[in-house]
Length: 151
Ligand SMILES: [Zn+2]
Ligand SMILES: [Zn+2]
Image (cartoon, helix red, strand yellow):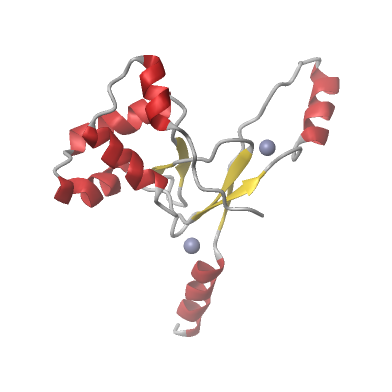
C-alpha cells in the first residue's frame, strides 16, 4: 500500500484550458493537495477564511477543480459530500467514514478479473473504472471501543 502525494501540474492544466490560475485558486488547491483527509466545501472555506478567500469563491473553485478532474468527490459515513485531491495514475481512495482520513492505494490491475468477467458477460469493451472504498480507521475503531466501555 502506497500513499503517493498528488502531483498534478495544476498550473499546466489551467494554462492548457486557458483558465487563469489565480492566487485564490492556488490557495484552495494547496489546501487540498496538503490535506490527509477529505474536506467539505464549508470546512475548506473555514480553513481559508483567514487568508481572505470567501465561501462563494471556494464553492465555485471546488466545482471547477472537480469538473477538471483535479478533485475527487467522496462521501463520509453521514453521506456528507467531501473532496480530496487524488494522485496521478491508477489509485483509489480508502476513506474513513467517521474522521474522513484518506489513504490512497495503488490499484494497478486490481479489477482486471472483474472487468474481464463483466466484458464477457455483457459484451462491453471495458476501458476503466471508478472505485472508492469506505471503512472505519484504526483510531476511530479504538475511540468506539473506549466509548462502549464507558456505557
Ligand atoms: Zn477515522
Ligand atoms: Zn482500480
